[in-house]
Length: 430
Image (cartoon, rainbow, N blue to C red):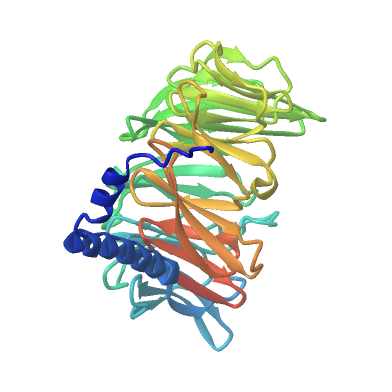
């Protein structure tokens, strides 16, 4: 007879007779039910509310120009039934603050407590300037006219003065004047050799000098505060398809294009001494924080402003945008929507965070951030808004709104100002 070992029968009997721990079972059941309840609650919870919401809308004509500051939206508005005017709306509520007749205006710029309005013939498409542009200064709080003067304005946000450039019939600048921003009082005036272009040099954000250049390359440096002649020299300028110049810190960058080749020459702005010249085929040159960047088909390079020595290079990128605060955006194509774009450190060219994909435009965001705009794929009638942290590259989705003209939007911290057909919409962000 075969025996089958069933183990210790006594032990089995004792285990079966052990009392049931009802409180413990109740606690276990409660844990299970709580977990199931949390899962159900999470699954049915509504999505987080959008941090992007339209506030108000106003009419917008193709000829209108728009500007904004942290409190107000300003519009130059023409009317077939009356004089053209500048209107000011409260940024958050859309309440009309004031409107002031100005005549034909094609530019508006708020600076501290003053709004500068450019009136007269627009330089776009003009070959003759019979009267030249004029500047009207309005009180930003009330719209009261403070002063009016000949010349187009170039204000500085850190200076109490406004530089005015008067033009002759050919469109060349013939007079430079510095006036007090608030009352228009003339601080100095200087007649100059007719200049094709002029620019302001800054040091630590404050304007220090004004540089002018004539059609033949005669270049002159004047003091910003007193208009005194500081230096005069001649630089290569004419005999090319186009020429322009702009400041980068204490340097002056001169761009000359002949046929399909663009060359950049960098001068020291104080005395116009030539520092270096780009020897490679480039598309354009721009300031890159502490460096100067050259960009083109061979990539983007960050260069020492004084020597042109290459500090870093990105062969995978072709375009660069200087964001300030030591940050750049680099992209492989000019069309941001179809190219990979990266945030990089301006001093090293090092990528920060993960790549940005599908962005169509970027505007000012809160301090230390950038607001990115992108058309959504599904549904295709929306614009997605994302905040990019410039310190670490972190991207935070803020929500979507009805489709905008993304590349035409303006921004100040907390707000977007975007045209949409025949209207202008103000949107709160975050």
